[in-house]
Amino acid sequence: MTLLPPSFRALVIGSSGTIGSAFVELLQADKACIEVVGIHRHSEYPIDYRHPETIEAAAKTLSLGGPFQLIINTIGVLHSKEWMPEKKLADLNSEQLMDLMKINAIGPALTIQHFSTILDPQHSVMATLSAKVGSIEDNRLGGWYSYRASKAALNMLIKTAAIELARTKPNTGLIALHPGTVNSRLSQPFRGEQIGRPALDAAADMLKVIQNLGKEDSGCFFSYSGEKLPW
Ligand SMILES: NC(=O)c1ccc[n+]([C@@H]2O[C@H](COP(=O)([O-])OP(=O)(O)OC[C@H]3O[C@@H](n4cnc5c(N)ncnc54)[C@H](OP(=O)(O)O)[C@@H]3O)[C@@H](O)[C@H]2O)c1
Image (cartoon, rainbow, N blue to C red; front, side, top):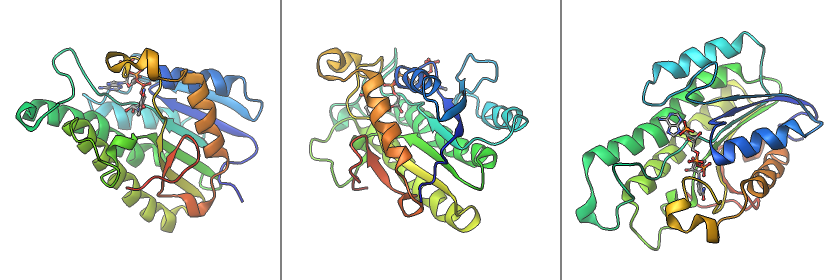
């Protein structure tokens, strides 16, 4: 049996982003989706990982509207005005490492903590976008220290929470999801426009993966193609 019921309410976290907004567009056109709510830093119920208290506040407010059967968290950063991914060990610095940990690992973990309480205990899925470069086993090229480390930390947090939820909410699945290379703000400085796919294609593929998930898939790391990725 699949975790996602035939008709569901969905929440997209980070709906201002390229992939987040593609998920909202896709779900709005999906007959199985009764309602889709999108939240981001500047939405009605703001969520800002530089202000972790906003995570619990947004979850509390949204809990008043009843449970969600699908939550997709697309928040993540790779570069900023101040820095680009490190090419070598000499580029490592504590500010960049801490910032990426805060936004790519700590924020999503606290989101799982607070938003898993508004998931439907009967049937539900929470997917968090990770990245294949966060796979330790798959790391062949090196570089991008803080992005890789923050996504690896995120993967461990998802896996650990999935083990706990399997005991307390056995019909809820938590997964890490790799979107592939997508043409977006995040990939733009790395030839994203040339090598990335349209966000709507990536979101459609990821939605198929989500729709096919069973209980046994909780705590796994999936690619948009449905392939299970190594941690
Ligand atoms: N694009 C790719 O090729 C690719 C590949 C692998 C994995 N991913 C992952 O896919 C996810 C979505 O990426 P994308 O390509 O859609 O990137 P994007 O267009 O840059 O969107 C990033 C999202 O994260 C939000 N965000 C950034 N910092 C935040 C903060 N401090 N608090 C709250 N929200 C914050 C952004 O909000 P604002 O609009 O307010 O800035 C935006 O909604 C990320 O987790 C990324 O790591 C992407």
